[in-house]
Image (cartoon, rainbow, N blue to C red):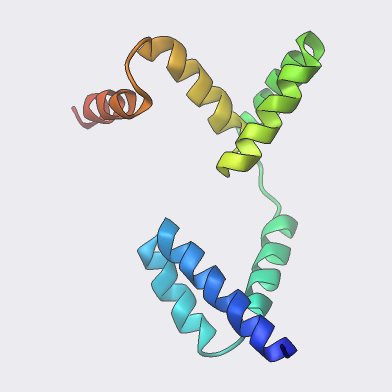
Length: 122
């Protein structure tokens, strides 16, 4: 298999993954793919994103929560990091989901989302 074939397969998988997450982003990505290989666009995008200077007020507090969790139970902290990575969410989102489990009690996660979404629409 040539490098071109491998790149085409990678680009196809990338497009499929993005399509599963967001149709609008997929449309934009498909348009970009006409001008340059998506693998190149991926690398450029990540480079730009990680170098972008941003100030998030909540980042410091999330970091404080992580430090607290780690100081209390390092194994729990490691499992939190792994679960967030596997779910593809930020640690802040993971902590928020965990807190929602406490407030939702015995209802399923889907029911909890529906309750939360309905209460936000009001």
